Image 1 (cartoon, rainbow, N blue to C red):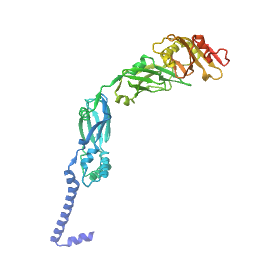
Image 2 (image 1 turned 90 degrees about the vertical axis):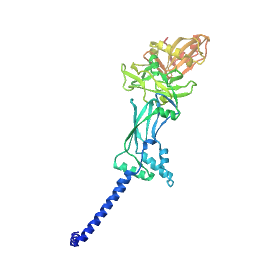
Image 3 (image 1 turned 120 degrees about the horizontal axis):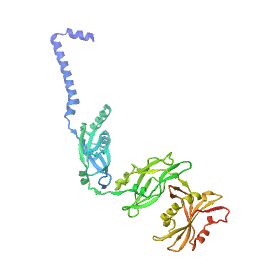
Image 4 (image 1 turned 120 degrees about the vertical axis):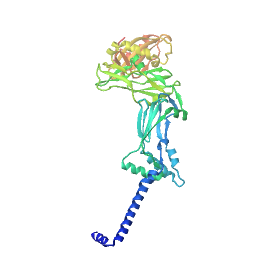
Length: 416
């Protein structure tokens, strides 16, 4: 290297000037080319504003004002169409657009409201009114790896995306009209007050602990029939006016484990009620407060102590227990027994002897041992066997084998 420098110094002055000028020219030319291709041309190239491809779509054509549900998305189809060239391969182009838009981050918030969401390529929203205005922000990643990946996809589609952060507003009312949505008024359903007014929260016995549940029920609220199958359920089935299953309402307790008598618990709607809300069910009512009690398993003593609860259960479920009982029939409990099977206590039974005073017959209903008492309420979840119709209460008693006092296999106690 030193030898080259020495030779350069030994050259005539005029020659050295010419060489220096030439070298400088080459360097300037190279620098200009770098500036042109790396800075000036990219800066001067038209940039595509992706915000014009942002659209709002709704989950269903039937929506409920106050609970609109849908998504803010980047319209890939429209973007791909604008990228098309005569020599472009459709599959390659679509893939490049998908990969490019993968990097676009969307965020939204409701103007003057508390709704918000964020995600890549799309943002789902719900519980919004048609009058809401969404403030949307579009941004792109700033790390070098993402930038390089974005540049590769831009080269494939032949477009340069404007990657400056942009914020703009979307009026949901515009999209409601554009997509011709059918807006309906939601139906208010207050099942919490119904549960509270009918004392349906119960303390449930276990092997060595107690828990909490909602007793089975079936009722009509507005145009809907609501049914809870058993205290094990954490949802209420909703049927429409034609009797077809419509949706479910989910509920939860503030606590279900390590409970003891006197503990406070709260019943409330679960957060997982999106299906009901989308179908126009507006859940109302305040959470229900409940104090745990010590439940009693079914026995002769507990049945005697809670005789009124047994009678109340029969009065509420008479037509379900005996399908021969018609609306308007007057029924009356004559006697109540508890029968213990000495060989197998799983066959212990609570036997209710009753009369249908309208149709003039007596009957014995044998209820399996699967029941308990909770706070003065009889909760039954087992099976019932009906004996034949009789003319008198004594005949109804004699028709029940488990009430045979002369049978050495049974111990029968009259509890009421």
